[in-house]
Image (cartoon, rainbow, N blue to C red; front, side, top):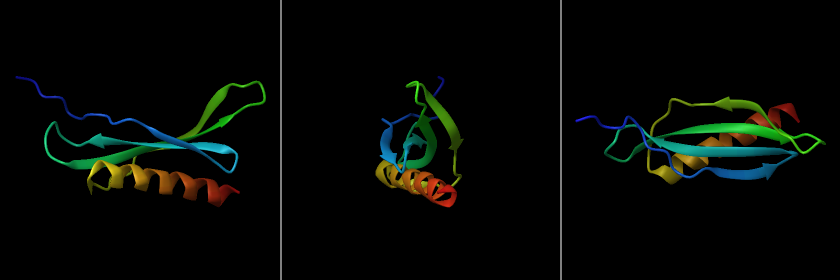
Length: 84
């Protein structure tokens, strides 16, 4: 029997200081409640094309999907703040 390594939740995306920041949680195993975040920062060019500026995958593990997603958004916003 083969188990999936991780499961993906729905992505959270929101506008922030001219960028789109997003985060989604990944289940570390096919069972349990340990999650980690993935996130990205994108911008929309004048032509309407969306371009990914950067992405990240912190190694911190969270108990609960919402906590992991919130952490991913915080990191994305911090990245934007450092460059604003």
